[in-house]
Length: 186
View: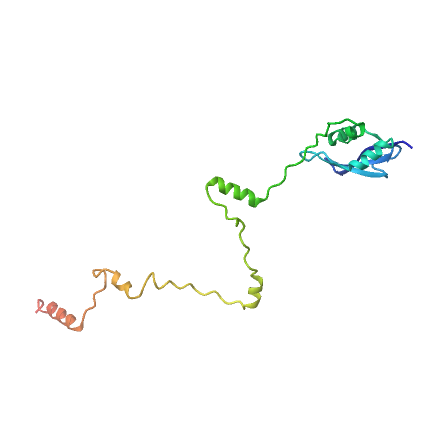
């Protein structure tokens, strides 16, 4: 039985994901496998490669032949160099940088702006209002009252000018005015 180390395709259309598998060479590409020894996601930046090194060394040691693509992956991870016995040659595997927390990014931007970091960059959530609504019966909204400080009742008439205020005539003044109007006609 000829044993091969090759890629088994998974994933959606235009989003390939592969498993590095050990399989009989007469089996289909995505058929039954002897063992899965790694993962390869080429669409990520940088490509995600994970190989179980000791299992890859075992299968290479017992005579499994890697396909061209798997041979390149094993060279990147350094497993091929280890199998061949080359010293001082590590793989060229690139990994993603560690993702920084949003709070750390905020605090760094705050320091650049000249402020001090307090460590409290996250706002606290308000308590749940659903429990309050169930406990209290619904009341009709009340009309807003004007604050007493802004327009006091005692100052409102004093602010109007005297010329604009309506003149209130006493009964004596109205009688005198009626007599003066009546004299010229007599």
